[in-house]
Amino acid sequence: MLKELDPLLHSQLRLGVMSILMSVESAEFTFLKEKTNSTAGNLSVQLDKLSEAGYITIEKSFNGKKPLTTCRINRKGMKAFEDYVNALKDYIKK
Amino acid sequence: MLKELDPLLHSQLRLGVMSILMSVESAEFTFLKEKTNSTAGNLSVQLDKLSEAGYITIEKSFNGKKPLTTCRINRKGMKAFEDYVNALKDYIKK
DNA sequence: ATAATTTGGTTTATAATATAAACCAGTTTA
DNA sequence: TAAACTGGTTTATATTATAAACCAAATTAT
Image: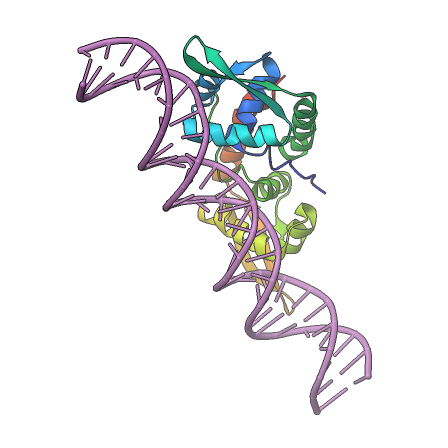
């Protein structure tokens, strides 16, 4: 029987964000927006969800006078991502 | 930049169905229901969507006196599945 | 014989999700 | 000083997934 796919990760945008965060120390809002080709509104909402799940940490600060939102993945998020990828393998293996 | 993930395939249940259909000649409704651990209603709806997209063919017949719904994947569906898996690889590669 | 249950589904209503549009505060540019 | 831009958030709407209700026919139990 096929495994459950964590619904929080099984979303194109959230998965994209997590995928990026797995490979960098931290990423700024604008960087994520560009890489995932998402709108700011959608990204904002999805980042909040990942944050509320404890998968990522969002830090709000200022870059000079401009607001700066920086994200990084948490240990819990890494674990969830790995579990998701493992579960997914059953679906996509030939 | 991350690729688009075909929204028709980026759904746990539809992906599960397609994954199964990639590996068998054909599959009955009840078999798919069991393997994907889905409810009949949900499965019925999702099969229709795959069928309308031309990804699968649904054949309704009778097994003696009981209705029998048999599904098989189409060439278009195979192509879509392969494209989806390729796009997904960018998201899950380490 | 007939009532209850099961099989194999479909249809419809509701809950959850994703997305876009509208908005806001502050900043820079014309 | 007005317009446009940056870096977002909030809110409304469209889409999607899911469950619940339903249906017809068959089977089983009384």
